[in-house]
Length: 193
Image (cartoon, rainbow, N blue to C red; front, top):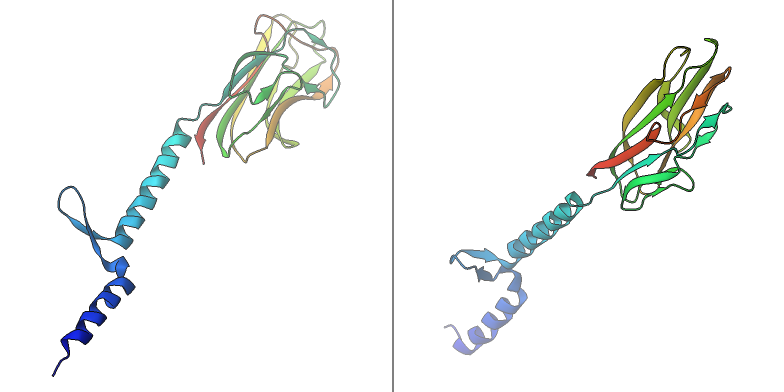
């Protein structure tokens, strides 16, 4: 025969031991296990974090305010006036953007050069990422008119990666025009990763 007192001791112990199997009722009367509920709650938290990332806006536009006359090779160009700096990640004092979060970013540099007296001159400007050249533009041989050239790139950056511009392949007499937004450096976050 079965002892009812023993059964009354075993059932509560079993229920307590297997509490994760208890069913929870939601507002529609649907039952889910506590384990399933916790898993769904974790997924909701992860989705909320992704939404917060999507709302992050990082963007800057900076210009060169004065001419740079006869720069030498590998000169760091400091675009010294911030026109836009959402997130404050571009430092106009040093001319460097530092990524605050991992993500995919777009960068562009626009360089304007006035007419030169001879065609035997060259000036290249590179966008740099952590001491590595990632894009280039050049204003070579312009004798009759102003030239405006652009280079742009899309980069995946980690937190703390820096991006800036520098001169390269200098030959002859050259000027990079400053002021009136003639020469500019810009960037923005496309998507956090």
